[in-house]
Structures are given as C-alpha cells and as structure tokens.
Amino acid sequence: MTLTAPDPTTTRSRVEVAPVGARIGAVVSDVRLGGDLTAEEVHDVRAALLRHKVVFVRGQHHLDDADHHAFAALLGTPTSPHPTVRGAANAVLPIDSSHGKANAWHTDVTFVDRVPAISVLRAVTRIYERTRFDLDGNKDAIAAMERQDLDEILGNLIENAAKYGGGSVFVTVDAEPLSPHCVIWIEDDGMGIPEEEWPRIFDRGARLDTGKPGTGLGLAIVRDVAEIYGGTVSLAESEDLGGLLVKLALPRAGGSSGFVESVPLT
Image (cartoon, rainbow, N blue to C red; front, side, top):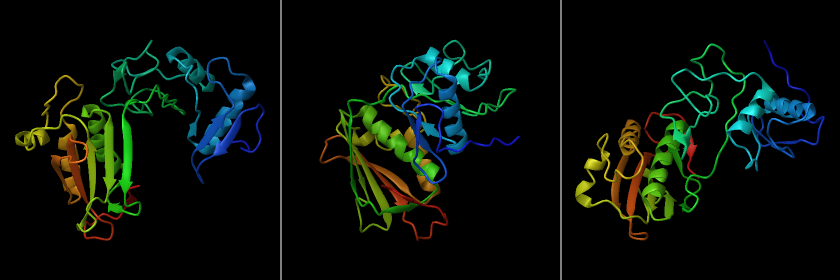
C-alpha cells in the first residue's frame, strides 16, 4: 500500500508546518499534543508526518506517559510491546531516562506481529542539565568514517565526560592540526583517573566508579571502533580543566583509510 501525503501547504486547523530539510524533517507548531486533539489537528499532524517522514513538536512539557500514549492512539492503534519488554502500563517504553533505560530496542518494533507505521518518541528532559558544553576548533575538519560510528564514539566520550565531570565539558576539534590524523580532545573538570589505571580503563567491563550507572563497555567500544578505521584513543590529564583528557585520533578525509564516507566534525 502506498501512503500519499496531502498538500503540505494547506492545513485544516491552526497547526503550522515548517520544513527543516529538503526531503525529510519538519517542525510542527501551534498544537498541544494529547488525547484531546480535534479531528482537524490530527489530520494536519498526520499529513505533516506522511509528507516529511520525521516531525518535531517542541514545547510539549505537559505530556506524561498517559498523554503520550493517548496522542499516539489518535494516529492509529498502538502496537503492544514484546511480552518480555515492559514499560508504563505496557505502553510507553523508556529508552534512556531516570525512570528506566533500554540496553537494546527497535523503534520499528519488528519483533511483534504488526509492524507500526509510526513511532512516537518523547524527550523527557535534558540528561545533563547542569553541565556546560563548549566546542572549539577547526569547523572545516573532516574525518573519513561512517557517520553512525562517529556519532556513537563521540556521544560515548562526551557523555562520559558529563557523567564523571564536575559540570564542564570542553571539546576541541582538530586540536593537533599538524598531526596526520584529525585529533579530537574531550576534556572534563572531574576527579580524573590515576595514570596507573589508564591502560585498564579500556578493558571491557572495567569501571572505576561503581556508584554511577554503566556497563564498563563504553571506552572499550570507542577504542575498538576507532582502531577499525585506523584511529587511536589515548588518555591524559586536562591542563585547562584539571580532569580527564581523552584524545581521539581519526583518519582525515582524503587519506588512505579506505573508507569513502567523509563526516564533517562541526
């Protein structure tokens, strides 16, 4: 079956739709999500979703799990999760929050009998609200690696810096411009790690602070992914912030890494 989206320039309600990309993505505004939307508002939100594939609705801080599920039910019949995966009232599944965290999940829920046409995700809050993140460096730097791998390892390192730091994280792109690699520094103002522990922290399952959540796989995965692309990960003490400095060295675009996708770093 082919789903055809209505003309996105017209709406039946006061809902406004603003595209953010040439093909995918739009911001939907002037609507308060929940189970009490009018038929016209539901039509306009659904039309925007069919047309733009991904839509963002900001400022929905009033939503709780019940309202979230009620809004989803207006778009179609919600698919129940797998019997082994439980969320609030078996309806809303936590991905990464203070209420719960999934170690593996599928937004398309392909393991159930009915594959959903739409997935509704809700950002509950910013994870590290009291942490300041600063970015500096070469905005034109490009690493030769798959985007999803770069996102994974940078996200892992920056989250670690926020989790174990004291409130400040500083990322410098192309911190060593004369290096044959594109070197990214991730610094924090935490307690740091004793130098004698640096080699062990890359072991799978290694955790120096067992008081914080985690599996101890993060740095090991970062190292493994970086090495696949011919990169490296090393540790040092941050001279500016006093905490840990992680140096991620990745092949520059145009080098001999053998990987064709080039990802801008800023």
